[in-house]
Length: 286
Image (tube, rainbow, N blue to C red; front, side):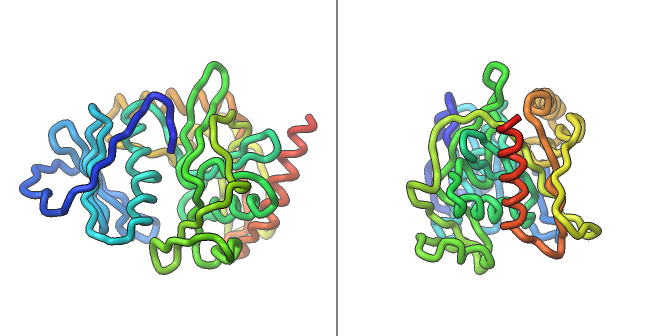
């Protein structure tokens, strides 16, 4: 992830260096099925992140990240640094990063936002196969610039689950788990730079619906969804949460947002792409 004015230093150290740490735990993150994701704690003024396969220490003063891996899977470590650790450091710098994928469609930028497993990367991959370009996958920064909200490119890679990997049969693949791989995109499939965001789409799988629907939502709903999808370093720090709320409120004021409601038990990324493209092109005409 590239963000102006934040230069990050990363160093790799052996696990043996993690001895006698006085950690004050702040919170623990789990998936909807209660599977452990990671924990955040503090060591003096630094932050400590614990995953099953690595630990990290973030020094927010020097923008330095120390990584202590206990796996040989380099793709997994790189993915975690760029999509988990750096976004948390940026949150400390008053830059918000959301769990999302951003795509350039013509001259418009859309952002697909959703929880893990909701299909944002699969939909993004389907749009790439239709000739559109990836800006960033899994971690999308939101940058206020004058009266626009802009974003920056991430790595030229996309993370896909096993059922979607076949979309890129000839691409380089690095597996980070048995069912998930990082796909390295070709030059024509991604773009770098700074871009104005035009539309936000929040993915909403619904067990009670039988068809895909794109529904415009209110500014209040947009703020709630942005807060739910944003990276937060300290969820109990009132000042940090208040400042993030103010920043995300400005995003909601500026960018049009909609729900993409689709059948939970009948996920069809191609049909969702068709609906998104129709909506985006219709907005370009108006």
